[in-house]
Length: 100
Figure 1 (cartoon, rainbow, N blue to C red):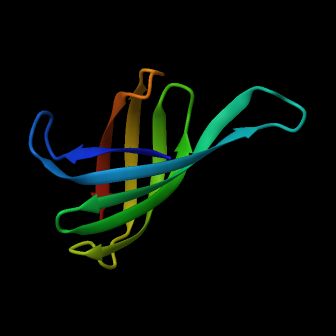
Figure 2 (figure 1 turned 60 degrees about the vertical axis):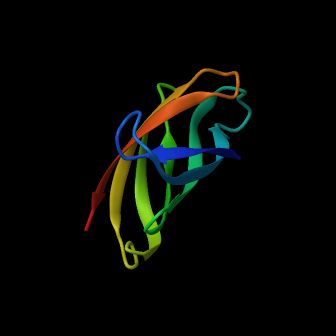
């Protein structure tokens, strides 16, 4: 599980937290991963959003919004991620949402 703070703009105040879990996907008999299947929970000041999708080796992911609460109750849509891992337990990610 990975967690981090959420900011609406870089270096702005925190508006919540994100929690992520992932499963590495690989072909049968192979030790090379194809992608990572991830589940996300965004706990924001005005509600929550959940999503599922895949992240490629370059850190780019495509996700479906699977639910929400508070301001985001009934939300659906998608989002893209660009993750920048530094392999020391740190890093950053950018998320771009299209909610309907």
